[in-house]
Image (tube, rainbow, N blue to C red; front, top):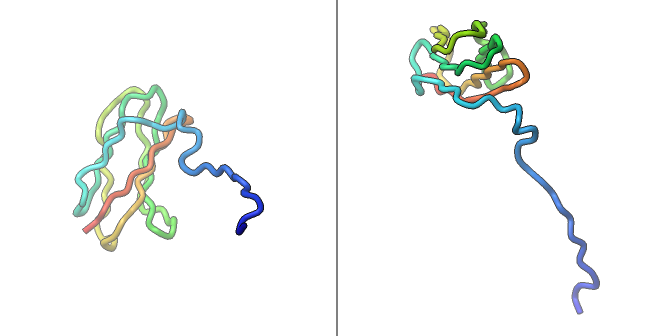
Length: 102
């Protein structure tokens, strides 16, 4: 017999704390040339939109009011082409999307 015993190990992968995910955020145009718009649903809290590069450096940050649901325009003229993280934080909820700059 080749195996004497088999040990079963359970491992979980994926996202934790899904309840704190901010739903309904839209990032456009994607790919982008010079600006990115972020549509944030009404959440009852002020929101902060942050664009970061692959090294975690902040490219642009914008604060939005709590009572409105509209697209926030973030200027990104002059940054190198590539992929950027667009993070929206509203109260305790967050949403992170990827935007491509050409």
